[in-house]
Length: 514
Image (cartoon, rainbow, N blue to C red; front, side, top):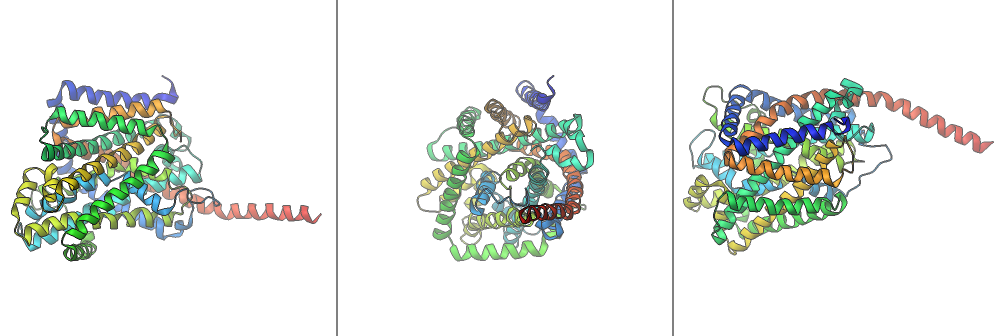
């Protein structure tokens, strides 16, 4: 086998194997997936929670310590994208599609089934926003930022290939180009494929529910397969237009659509209540951040934490190589401090506002207005929650269509970044991967998404994500140590670089004087 293609062929073969098992042995795949999930929840939940907290602490240390002034690139490099565009691309390539899916469903689910205390009460309403903010707060973005800053440092500062195996150079040296490095890249590729396929699955289920709600189209595999085929054709076609063109314009379009939907609900909904919910939620989250981050429920069955917190933390870990690799690609020229402040905290505020507007309004409608039918609808089918919510607003059909378009565009941008990153890693860090490689991965993502829906719907999607998170969490913990060693080495080199530059300038001046 051509060693230059080893990562591509190995990861493609494993992906095709997963697809084949799903097609020919769907029940066995579903059973294995569920048993793996059960084992992880019961035995490794503490490990996932602890790992995510370590990632956040390490990111804060990098940004606020002596490492913060180090630039992700040469000292003369400056950011390629304006900060607003950079944040928009970061947001669009990561959790945008998930915000639309869970914006109403998750807070209402916690309201009617809280982690503790009385259900459907004022207490559960506060807890709902508090735990939503935990799941979508700094813990999530720290996973992305860790991978992003590590890869950007070694790629742009140390001039290593743009593959995650490069991050381990301080530990294994040139072995990153051998079997160990290739094994790391294969694990990363598989996590990206499963992560993006899962998001496509969630988005497909929601769009199918919206079409059923608006036009009566059936909710079944045939409809969902057609949706996936159409979306796949669009994102595969758009990805060949290149990063500068399609991604930038689609990210900007995403932001415009998201702000339009957010503004509509904010100003036509309970505006004052929304702002109260936002500030109350942020305060409760900040006050209880540490205790919630380590909540394992050892004296009960832990089913709530398993179904929600571990699922979300596993999701962020599984998505970290994808989002981190893409964010690294668009962050050349920024300092580590600038990167951390922008990549960890600014998107969090956007997520918090989104949930306050969507989820907070939904809880207000149920708790304060007595419209319990909305709670019943959410508990019956989370994929239709957003569309049921829009029934309480004018122009509900228009809002539903806008939401579906937003889901599709969010997915196209996410898939664009995914196939781009997959292409880079498959071609040993090639910053401009070939179109055939990107097209192949685009098709594989769609096929795995269909298989995951076939073998268990939402539960199957959740199981695959959490299972992929465990080996990645181990890699990311090692990544923390490797990045620390790399940054320490960079600080030791800095005085030498300055001395060399000073000597060169003195030589130039001496020549000019002569």
